[in-house]
Length: 352
Image (cartoon, rainbow, N blue to C red; front, side, top):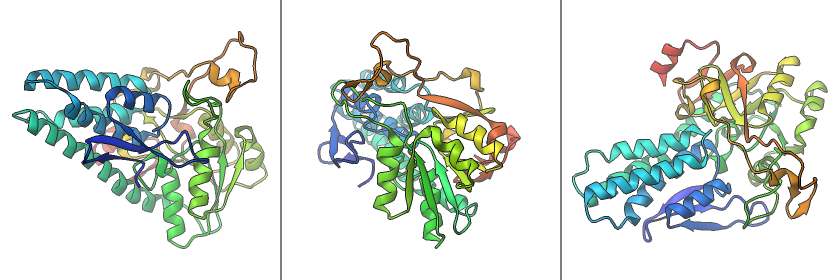
């Protein structure tokens, strides 16, 4: 199934619980905004495009579950739910984009029934478009890969990070579909050693999710720790680096913590460093300094699962994302083509 979808019989959101992979594949339901927020915070659903769909479906969920008796009261409930959803992951722009897009789609609704219908139709459109856009993005990106290339990737930018197909991994899937022999080196993507209070197993997204996805598709993949990327690039084991993105401003790409380090190493060794992301991830109204970096809980570094691995009172700095300056980026792969910095901002706005 898709990573996230809508149950038309129950009017609930259904999704793959990514915290259980690779040991267990389970579909869970979110029937309230509170349960959806918990799923987002605990990373049961994650990845910029998937969060865009989650934001859209979340607005629809609030419309269907509200017991408001008037249209004005319903709209107020929906707007409050939207603010709550956006606050769960402040760095990823797609979440707020999905919420705001569906709220705008309801503006012409004349009654409660139309509001719910418009919200669900728009949320479903976001999900369907994501799959189509990722396929288009993959086709553009595949042209950058040569037969025999080994690609290093960080975190998870595959179908689990999207509704389906994927961004960075979508490029690899498309290249393989073209008959190219592509291998992958996946960084384990620390430091998420611990999940939520309910789910305490390690949640490193590269080792658990990226490797699982690629092995399911029978794409050769080798797992390394994040700190090994310099070694493998210096040894000539990497031909390209492709990562996803949670937000792209005029001057930087925001992605999972550690991405900036890989970009420096790639630049030092003359290895192309590509970012694969739909244009909904572009936020060219802002600069790097305008973006709030999400800070995760200290316990995620003090514990590995349930086991303590650091002093309980040690100070912890645990940002979930970092910013890679555009001068380290070779190109950005989108469904509208490949953009090469330095960007002419007005030209990019026209094309996206």
